[in-house]
Image (cartoon, rainbow, N blue to C red; front, side, top):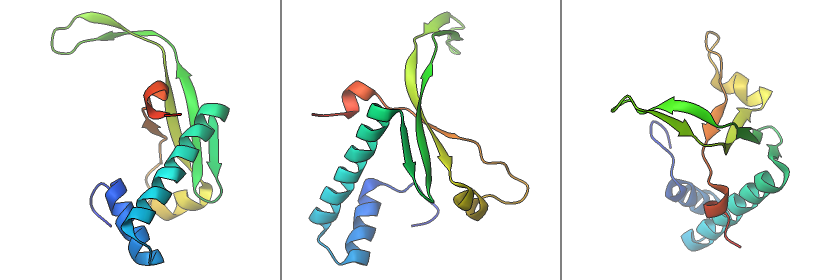
Length: 116
């Protein structure tokens, strides 16, 4: 699982191989974990996974932007965004001595991603 984007299917396949479970079961487990993570972020604006990292929900204010193709100014509406920060332990594993790790921004539409 190196050198490319890891998909849900890749994770399900690895879970299935390493845990000796059916792919269907591994998919159900992964979907449940993702659902719990999203619910945690939505309800608390924070999800911490010990020795892995933290997901934070942040609010972005409305701002002016520009359409690069037409050069027209436009208003970018306020929204929520997710920021992920690695734990200190994982930063050391991933970062080279000359690189600084920046937060990863993830866009989540809170109304579309949560199905009740």
